Amino acid sequence: MSVIDPASVLTASRPPRPSAFSNALTFGWRAVLKFRHVPEQLFDLIMTPLMFTLLFTFVFGGALAGSPDDYLQFFLPGILVQTVVFNSVYSGMGLSTDLSKGLFERFRSLPIWSLSPFAGLMVGDVLRHFIAGLIILGVGLALGYRPEAGLVGVVASFLLLFAIGFGVGWIFITLGLIIRTPMTVMTIGFTFIFPLVFASNIMVQPETMPGWLQAFVDRNPVSHMTTALRGLMGGSATGGDVLLALAAPAALTVLLAPLVLWLYRRD
Image 1 (tube, rainbow, N blue to C red):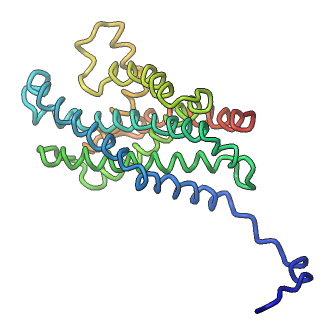
Image 2 (image 1 turned 90 degrees about the vertical axis):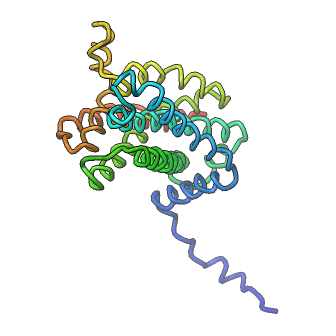
Image 3 (image 1 turned 90 degrees about the horizontal axis):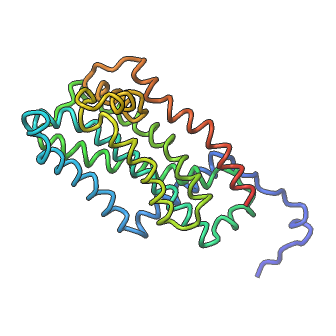
């Protein structure tokens, strides 16, 4: 049986402190593991975008565009934006759940980068956006949707979706820090984002709307996101379209990330 020399223990060098990137990866892996341990999340993640895509295409497609096929070409990029915005609510709900269990008290006591737990939430969001986006795109391709920009346009569209989800996610993380019940986070979050999503150009063009509503839709950040995504999928997007789509996510990140850190350290 080997004997440990006390002197060697006292003189041993402390292992290097993990980097912020390493911390973020660790919490990101924690977010990935949640899908394995809570598989019911995947049911909601899969069924909601699937039902929206099928119902709107076949129920409203003929009335709005003359045929489901024509409407699908217009609608599918919009439903991708809608799904990403809706899915962002899971960040706030997950954070609220962790806070109620006291996990973040433990995280605060660890010598880690302050924002790494939130980076983990964002990784979970990106994974949700990717899975839901692939499902919607796969269903759309099966129904006849064809992105004119090809694979390059699809990849660029998904990168834009991730940026949108990253920016919108800060809203729900902020709510998750302020509101300690997950269902209340979801209720307040959807109360805020429902008017933005449905009073946009996701489902119809605003030309047939009343003037006051059309003015709102034309300035709605969700409309800018949808226009840019349609352009990327169709090969007609301009740099201005993409910048307008990124303006709101960038502003939300700049404004809310410091607020999230302040709320986290304050509690």
